[in-house]
Length: 113
Length: 111
Image (tube, rainbow over all chains, first blue to last red; front, top):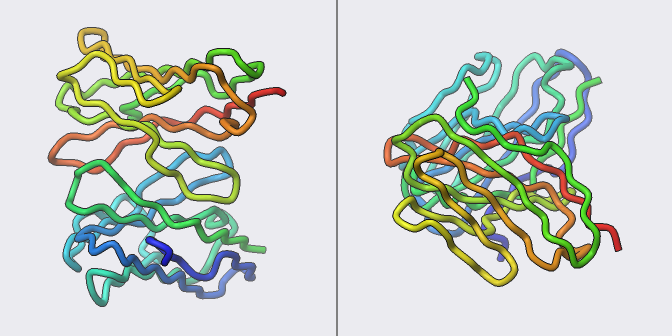
């Protein structure tokens, strides 16, 4: 009965590969997010979807493509992985857009070799 | 442009002491100021939050102090415990934007 679950928890891959991270929330929330946390722990928003519609698309390389098949799912696909993509990626959800209270998943640690 | 500045970057406090983390913001439209706590290997989780209509909010050993005129807010952890060792993030938002996070403070409470 995990509220926000993301898979896989760990990915180790070579430069140039493509990978996906999946996220599901069972809280009935309308809004979902992807955050990137770098080695210095800084949390940076990447994307936000509200009712399956893209709301925020920060300055992120277009190698990153989010997809929201329904309100409960938000997946992240990354093409042509680069060393600098190594980070922990967090999925999060909130009941409404900009309510402030985010519920985070446990993160997916991506290591690009 | 970093809209929420957090300090210190790291903090070591003895068990039983008071931990204090400070944040300053620039955008006067912000109206919601939460603090998130993150343990190693876990995602951040909401700890306590305040809105600018009050100057202080207390939940157990955790207190937020808010100074609207100075555009500053702080987290105080009373009687700090080793189990409080974590990374703490302040954040801010308004009704038109998602959360802007500070850069985080790594707190270590020594036994």
